[in-house]
Image 1 (cartoon, rainbow, N blue to C red):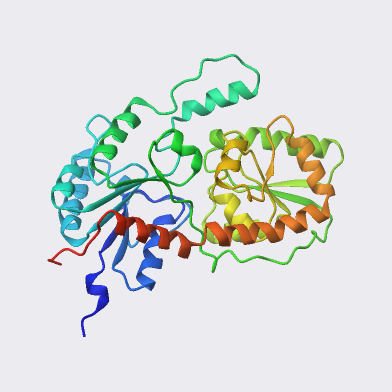
Image 2 (spheres, rainbow, N blue to C red):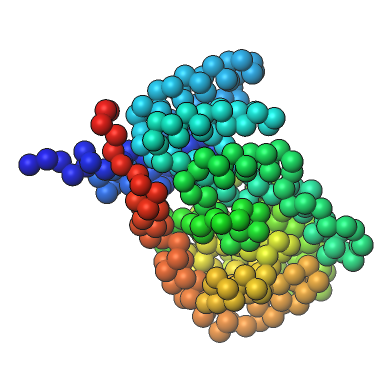
Length: 358
C-alpha cells in the first residue's frame, strides 16, 4: 500500500519569521504527516527556533549574504512544492530589484504564496500621520506603502498564486488578498482561572514590538495619570523578552493593552485572551462589524484610554466575562489547527501537487 504522505505537497515557510509563526505552522503540518519546513534568514529576540536558521545578519558582507541566499534557493526550489513566503520577502532580491527568483519558481510549476504581516507592506511614516491626526494636527494623508513596498507588491501580484494578510486592515494595502489570521498554539497559551491580584495592585501588560505602531507613549501616560490619582496600578512593559518568559509576565497581569492607534489587534491580544486576560485595543468599527462582530476586546483610543482603563478596573463582572469570551474567541478563529486547515484549502485551490522528483 502506498504512503499517502508521498503524494502530499512539500511545504516551505520562509524566509522571514515573525513571532514564531513559521515554525509553529510547519510543526503543525508535520504532525499531520506533511513534509514541512520553516527556514529563516532572520533571528528575532523572542527566541523562537526555526528548522533552518540561517541568521544572515552574522555575515557583514552583502556578497556573502547573497551567496548563501542563492545557494539555499538553488537547493530549495527542487525540494519543495509550496513556497509560503512571509514578510513580503522571497529568497532573493533588493529594494530596487525585488524577487528575481519568483519567475523561476513559476516556470517550475511551484505554488507561491505571500503572507503579509504588517509593516512589510505599511510604511512606518504612516503611523506618524496617524499619531499627528490623533493629536489634532492637520497633515495630508500619505500613501500607506513606500515606493519599494509597492514595487515588491507588483511582483507578488504577478507571480503569486495567492496573497494572504494576517489582519483585515491590510486588505486596504493588499487588494484581492485572503485573510489568514495570526495563529496561536493553544497547547502553550491555556486559559487561567479568573482571579484578582492578591496584593491589590492592578497590573496592565503591554508588549510592543514597535512602539511607534502600538502607541506605547499614550499607554505609559495613561498609567502614570492613574497612578497620580492614587490608583494602585502598575504597567508591565514587555520588550525584547524571550518568549519563554513572556507567558509568566502575562500571567501576572489583570489586563492587557495592545495598540491604540491603527484599528486592529495584534498577536499579543490573542496570547493574552487565550490565557483568559481581558484586553483593551483600538478597533476600527467598520472592520469589526464586517469581519469579527463577536470580537471581545474593549475598544479605546488615546483620548479616552484613562477612562476606559479606570472603568475596566472597577468592573469585576466585565473582566470575568471577557476572560471567558476571549479564550473562546481565540479557539474559534486563531487556533493553529484551524489556520492550517485554511492554508491547506488554499494550497489545494492553487493547484499544489507533489512534484515527480524528490
